[in-house]
Image 1 (cartoon, one colour):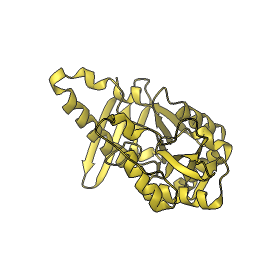
Image 2 (image 1 turned 90 degrees about the vertical axis):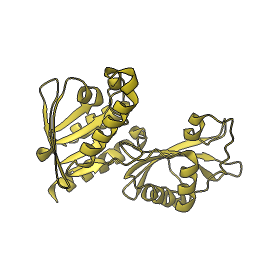
Image 3 (image 1 turned 45 degrees about the vertical axis):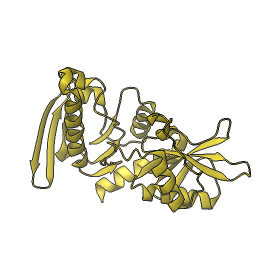
Image 4 (image 1 turned 60 degrees about the vertical axis):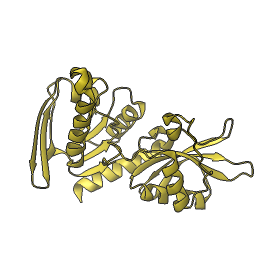
Length: 247
């Protein structure tokens, strides 16, 4: 069994599920975060370093860790609103406990898992822009100087660094290859190194054109718009999932 984990509003998750199904990856199940969170029955067991789970979804489908061969993980958070079931005074604590639980079972998924969770993201790291700039520079991408002051909002630290009206492109780095717009080979290699720097197997990268025509780093995400990669990316994902299951 293969899984695509995403929210019900995740267009890319729905796109990759349909695409993989049409390519013959199967049996494959689309599992949305809302059904995982509301009305499901969970068995979650920890035995030393091993994690086993069995989930019965509201529609009767059963997900058993022993049967899972591969997963595309696009879960951003436990389903929005689930913490509202707790008393107001306990909601922050309840949210933290839910994230810890999701980190446990996602990290314990067997087989090929694209993208595994980490301490700052259920489907990969959500770095602050200042951290992304450092990673991008180390990877060989040209990046703007990042400045922050006391008047900046928290949201600004996670926004694109591309100037207004700048020409931008989106790329996806996956296992040493870059998909999407065509860029110079040196830029493509740097994008691949950025994914390695971030320890994120499938990474979306936004670049913008500087005034002198160079491609500059603007932002990165572990949950990119997958259609940017088109059919070539879809075939690579299918190959990664199925070869990993049979190797």
